[in-house]
Length: 117
Image 1 (tube, rainbow, N blue to C red):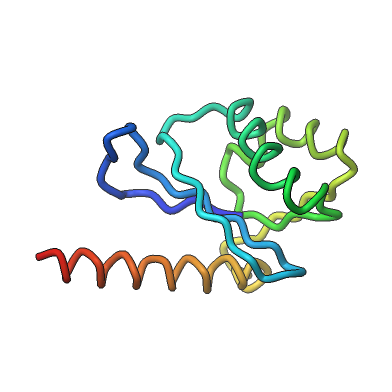
Image 2 (cartoon, rainbow, N blue to C red; image 1 turned 180 degrees about the horizontal axis):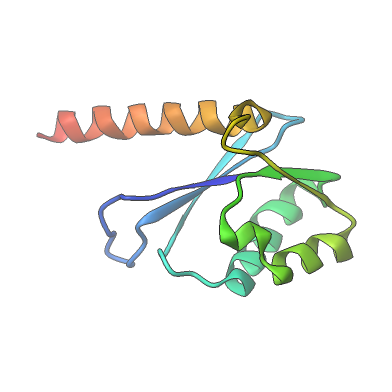
């Protein structure tokens, strides 16, 4: 679970892609969100888009983004029975699937932008 930012703003005001990779099925979800979206709204989207499709995960690996280390997010995951595992800057391989998926997404976006001229 990670965020890709620094993107141009869409007509709906989204400028970040929330990348969520299911480690079991290897399926990736790309959710366009606004830059300053608050954690309760992210939790709502998470339940609607991820938990509804894949059930409650037994664990989540994410970077140390403040949204994932907030008390609200930790309390939500604790209530759901999900273990939070945070990757570190010196061991990003702990979230390798997300990192590879993000690299592929960035490559595709770069190719699309170049093609559009």
